[in-house]
Every structure is written in structure tokens, then in C-alpha cells.
Length: 204
Image (cartoon, rainbow, N blue to C red):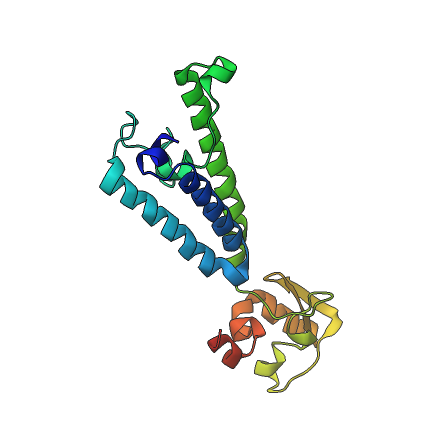
């Protein structure tokens, strides 16, 4: 509240930035809007940095120029973390400013860790190239044998009898030999772009 009062933007600036940060966090979690969310988050952070460089200064209320006391390199500046978390008035609960500051820092740190834990899940999932698979059963490339394209030069449907699990999908094969070849080196036989249309992939 002190920060946004100094910026002449209390309370609308504090509440508004909190809403924007929340929207950015949600957009980042959705694959279709991750870029928009990231740009929105960068914009908020750029505004926070600019406010420190132009009006607030690097050190705010004796914080040593650090975000809430956490050594983590991802901790946002004070205006980002403390601005959107409401403080309790010492007079209402009889809490000293020192105790209130510690409680506020703990809330900030917990919120930051929770947000980054949530973001880590979709980021880890996106690290693996998606595979084109059936909606029900998760069978890759409509059940065709990926090895047959190389060994037989033809599109041959695989059998439910010979299957292998790889990259989050079930792959079917026309023979046990083909299955074993695939398991030994799946990237040599798996289609590029996860089996999705190369032209469509190039168009986004």
C-alpha cells in the first residue's frame, strides 16, 4: 500500500495489478494462450522495474533492495509481491509492524512458491513432443505400424497383440520383430512432429 501510494495509484493500481497478474497466471497455464499470458506477465514486471528505477528507488522502506526475504532468483520485486497482498492494520489485531512484516513476507513467499509450482506442471508436460493419437485408447498414428514404413515401404496396420508404450502413447506393430526394433530405438521410427501433418505444424 505504501508503494502504490507513493506512485499515486492506491488503491486502483494495487488492485488492478493484482487482477492483471491473476489473469496472466491463468493464461500461462492454458496452452492456447500461454504466449499472451507471458507477454502480459512481462508487461507487469516491466512496469514494476520501471517504477523502482524512476520513482521508488531500488531500496524500499529499508528492504535492502531485495524482494520479500527470499534468496530465490525468481522472486518478484516488492511492488509485485507485496502490492497485491493486503496488509492487516496493526491497530485492528494488536500486531507490531515487525511481526506484521514477517507475516506478510511469509504470505508473499508462499504465494510465489505456489504459483511457480503450478506453472512447472504444464511446462514439464510441454517438454515432451505431443503425439498424434486417437481420442479413446491413446493409440499413436491411428494404429499403423511405424516400423513398416521403413522395413516394408508400406502403410500396414498394427495389431493389438504387439504394442509398446512410448512418449505417452500406445504404438501398434504388425509383428513382434517390428515392435522390438521400435523399442530399441523409437526415435528412428517415430514420425516427425509426433505424426501431425507437417504442413499444419508449419502453419502453427
